[in-house]
Every structure is written in structure tokens, then in C-alpha cells.
Image 1 (tube, helix red, strand yellow):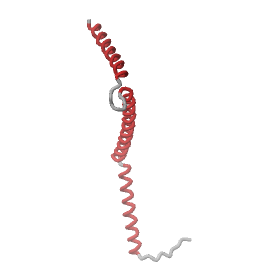
Image 2 (cartoon, rainbow, N blue to C red):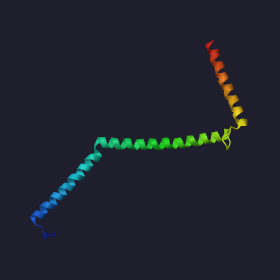
Image 3 (cartoon, rainbow, N blue to C red):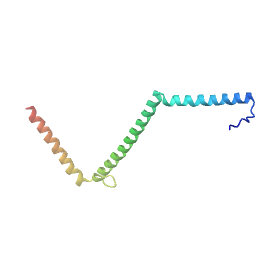
Image 4 (cartoon, rainbow, N blue to C red):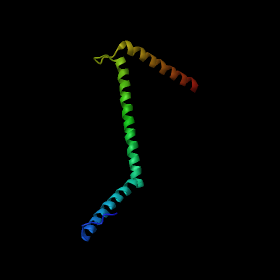
Amino acid sequence: MADTSDTRTPAQIEADIRRRREVLAETLDEIGVRVHPKTIVGDARAKVLANVDHTVGRAYVQVNRVVSEVRAQFVDETGAPRIERVVPVALVVVGVVGLLALGTRRRRD
């Protein structure tokens, strides 16, 4: 059996209904904004950009670590070049560039 002992006045009931309608209207507006295509696209774009930023940041850290490790092979703790390692690598680079230039020159002829 339902409880019918509501002691509110008709004006109080109307005010309560008005408040509930306002809350319901606000909720529906929020839902409408959330499911609007522009909002969905904007949220998806923000997530993609955040993932790209995160990936780029991680890649930067890894590249920086590799560069530091390679640099440590050719420079000592004081920052001076390690001649015994720099000269052989420089000779190899010069040799490869020379071979490439010679190969390109032969193809032109």
C-alpha cells in the first residue's frame, strides 16, 4: 500500500517539480554536449595528441640516451676527444665517402 501522507503544500510540490525539471534539463544539456560529434572528435583528437606527445617524448629520451652513449665512446670525462677512437672512425668515413664518390663518377661516364 502506498504512503499517501505527503504533508507538502501544492506550492511546495510545484517548487519541487520545478527544481527537478531544472536539474533534469541541465543533465540533458550535459549529455547533449558529451555526445555531440564535435565533442567526440575533440576528445579523440586530444587523446591522439597526448599519445603522440608521449611517444615523441619517449623517443627523444631514447635517442638522447643513445647519443650520450655514442658520445661517451669518442669523448673522455673531461670532454677531450679520444684520438685513438676518433681517427679510425674518421678514416672509415672518408673511405666510404670516397668510394661512393668514385662509384657515382663511374656511373656518369
